[in-house]
Length: 371
Image (cartoon, rainbow, N blue to C red; front, top):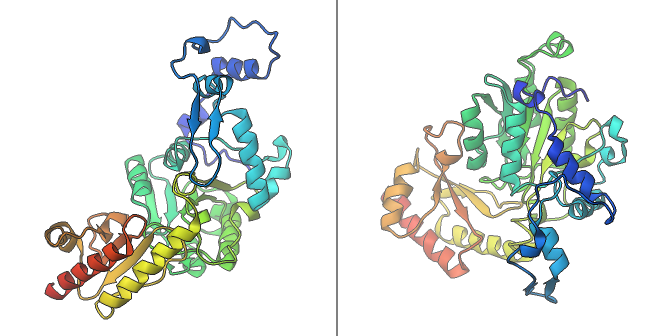
């Protein structure tokens, strides 16, 4: 891959910090090295010495003094080396990306750790987007992504999707606006990337099938755009088999994947959320049948509901629903243009009990009837 057309002028001008390079060099050196180079704090005066973390379904995790010093000290820019090494092996075991076996000169898979995938996405967007650039995504989509993209001045092209994610035929139709000559000359107007949440899309709950992913990847190769695979709900898929990831089929090094520990390490395992989803579907079927439409989400934490006979849910939710003591997210929050009306609402099944879901949808049903 030649990434020169993708990188912004600002990103292309960045140089590695010699101080950070020294930090990484020091960490790879033997203990006998005497370093007067780094401005790292002295670990002997760190206020936290050790910790014990109680685990919900296992033994406690002990963080001793040496490990605590490592945890609180400066590290390599990409992350603590041992953690990076473990995560790379983890990705190999899960996805077996072809690029993991390439040499660095060929474009070997690399990884860095960020403070949540949202920060990673922001860094990626700022690395790639110049004002006026064309980018592709399937809206409605995650409001945080839209908030990060809007200030960058890019032209967001919406790709139609259904309950199985992006529709490849529709994507192909959009891309046909660019000629073979544009592709050959690497025209500046070619879309730089396609952003998508392939599993349990927030807010729709849609998941891309394996066949569609293969078609989309081939279009990315033909029209030379990157794929940003934002996959926080990969481990919250409710039905097996799981479709292969874009990363697993990436021969070129054109897939930038973001994973998130917040949806798995801190929030538990998939069986709980599947039970929660099923409880919400039961409540929806009980109270909203005939008043609304929805598809069972294949992954994630959300049910995307279309309210019949209501062209825009903003007032219904932000004013009337609050009076009835039920709160959902109006659909327009997930539109590229947040002022465009939406007949949808997003309901989360991660926190509420089945009894609360039942009562909430009963109240929502009353609201819809009144509207």
